[in-house]
Length: 156
Image (tube, helix red, strand yellow):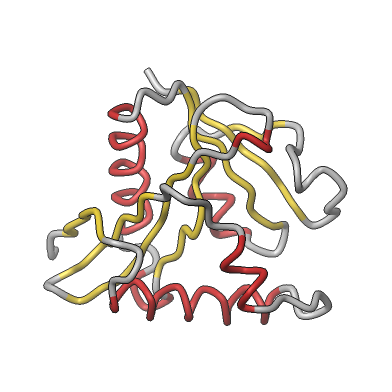
């Protein structure tokens, strides 16, 4: 089994950009009835975001981000842009990304990580639940989004 390497990368990292484009296309396919634009997708990312990139043998295979989101009304940091290349799913990449994100969040002094995902992303929901994330009431701006599901995990 090949080792998964997870490291912080700048927002303009080229490998990160490719994964985010793949994630955007995946979201547009799953939620086809919504007019998701790249501008609205990118606008969810706030100043000060911290991106993590997972590589296997030097090949980028997944990413995620942590950001503060005061509009949510929740304490802690929000997990965004969690994506694993379909060819790398089921190989531990998502678990490695979550472990690195939780370590980073603790280092930032965050008491919890919270996130939004969708009902049409059952594989993501399984990963979060397996890693100790529990469903919470929807937070802004997801409160009225029928296809949204929100989770949180307290950090020890």
